[in-house]
Image (tube, rainbow, N blue to C red):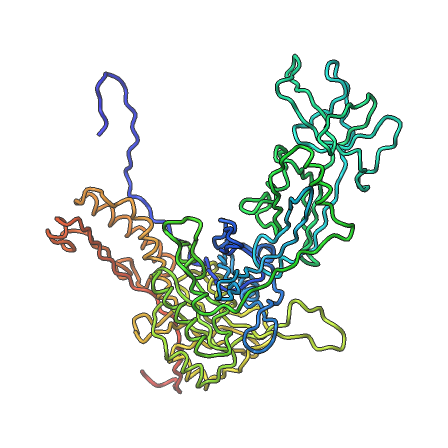
Length: 630
């Protein structure tokens, strides 16, 4: 209670209404699996990789390509003897956004080559070492593991405008330059080099600023050191141009990253090792990192600048690789180390730390040649959804499954928080351009990327209460197998959701059942509606913890929940002609005993009547004559 100790006017804010419950997002999706590039936890030669390795939120496929490397094939042997593999997660991300998805978290999984004999672990980091001076090195290296890091790199020195001016006391100075700037000084009468010409040996100097020598307006004196560290007198009329670096990185034909105005001394604002650092670079999607050892003298900046320059055609980093095939346990990942913040979670366990995710999938899970590995991957995905409670898993059956095989695969699971879709989906290879007279290459993909996008699209256009079925599948050529009505009559009762083609209506999702034997949770939309309701109430009611457990609190909670459910009823999520038929909320002495109150328990009982999908639409017709009575 406020205290009133002195006479005066006191204005206070009070609330005359209950708080409101805000619905949580239901379309945010999480994928875990192998990609060509992107954030992942690793330790290279005893050095921790970037701490910014958490799953990244992606809002478009263009952003996915920049962060995770696009659709290019992975240099991984999946056990079929082929040296490369499709990037199934990248294709799934493309399908997700193509089918209406908006928000996608990606947890990259990378399996390093560990020889197991105590030798160094190969984390697949691309690098190129550049010696300079007496035994020092500057190193270009990929920021993340992967063959994508074997980039083409060009570094050129760029001259800026003449900044020379004459100071009454200090003589010739360089306007606007600070300690550590590298300059090229052209003597009077000589022609200055063009901005992109090669550096002129003997004209390179580094600026040294003495803070103890300042003029009346606070301008410090500059000295110019040559490559031997000697102070050089600058003649009046000399041309002084600052020299900076331009770094051009080309990871692929359609991507070129340019970094301008880079300096080589740590005292400079745009020091190259800071702008292109490992942990927090200026460009958070930077492909390469520049590591330089501390400079032991001012003149070393000149040596480093000369060393960093590449030939006109540039250099290529080498040594990056895509690691080994991720096994089901790799997809599951590791928990974070509670005692070491640098050791973060990986795989599905990294997605488990993100509260917003409502849909999860493993696009690589059904791609193994061994059906047992596919089963193990699906088990880990389903267990993840069960453990997290507020999300549903979209499971892929193994590639090429027959009717009996897919039924046997489905029979190994029983979960209300998972749904399986069959068959796989064929698309034209997006990486190949059409050529006259040549059939385009086709790629067979697991359906999870398409289906999760349809889930998201359905949530946005209709609502989570609407079954994500009878929805068009976009971006395909055909399904791997043709599911007709007779086959669907077998698959649907067993909780296998068919993907079917209908003449004149296109390709559609034709099922909305979970992988459960419990008839109460048979439908995907019912399970997802309850996930939405439970999660929304959970987040909105955190304020009630440690409040006085009395009638006032109970009344407030009842009002909050009833207001929230009333809106759901108006939107069509609940069954009933009036609110009393759609839901009830009880939070009073009938739901709590004195023992509950004595032990700090508040119990609120909520009942809702969800709408079920009209899975079987039946019209009964019979003959009727005008004089007949029914």
